[in-house]
Picture 1 (tube, rainbow, N blue to C red):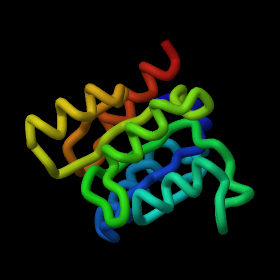
Picture 2 (picture 1 turned 60 degrees about the horizontal axis):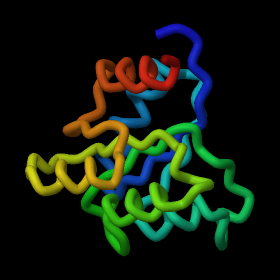
Picture 3 (picture 1 turned 135 degrees about the vertical axis):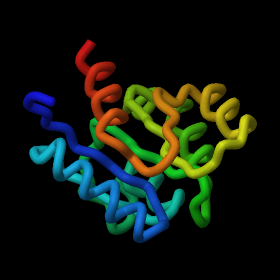
Length: 133
């Protein structure tokens, strides 16, 4: 996929999905540091540099699960897309949900991508193409 150097934030509560996603990123985007948070509240803390994420780096890409504890991925998406400092972060929804309502809400809140898990090489290619177009 060429030289890719992005800091990626993965907001995902399922350990198996974290492992699969981190492996595909490592295999295809080796130069991309990956930070992981396990709930929506932690994702917002990371993005707003709160608590233990005080020194976090603004990610170049956010991968968001929809169904997470504390705050859903859609709540996180709505918050960041309404924030002038964060709305420019490209955001990909990664979910097992095939709910039309979830897709509609993701679109309403300006998600850049909506993919069904697991993350695949093709998904990364689409993200990379959009980021570099």
